[in-house]
Image (cartoon, rainbow, N blue to C red; front, side, top):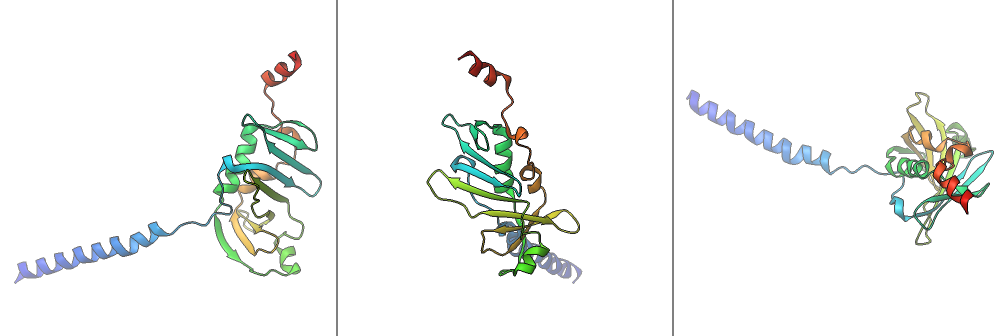
Length: 186
């Protein structure tokens, strides 16, 4: 009788393990994280970064590099531009709320006067919805974002600010000495 009980318990344990594996764990794997924006870096043609005091426009160069076209004409640091695009494409939506925020709500989230507004144009002529980055959360590990001018308020990781909040134009310039020397020889 004890052997029979042991076999029954073993079968029940195996069935319970199979249930957990096939139904519960697969739900976790199948959950897809929603991205703030969905695009590939090579699809991007133009980036406009609107800050309260300045606008920076970046444009893809023919050989694959990037150029600053406003407020001055100069070669852009390709790694800085790639970091901006990587931050935007990798940002996940942690939480979405305030589907139709009022003006007071926008003030609470720092989205009435965003820190930066990002506009991306694709090579096919289409444009991604503008991203408005507002204030950090009280804890500071997340930031309030709005996708499009009519979108709701979204919470995403504050690391997005690391690349977008850099307002200094000098840090976006290409600083390779070889490029300067090559142009000087011409």
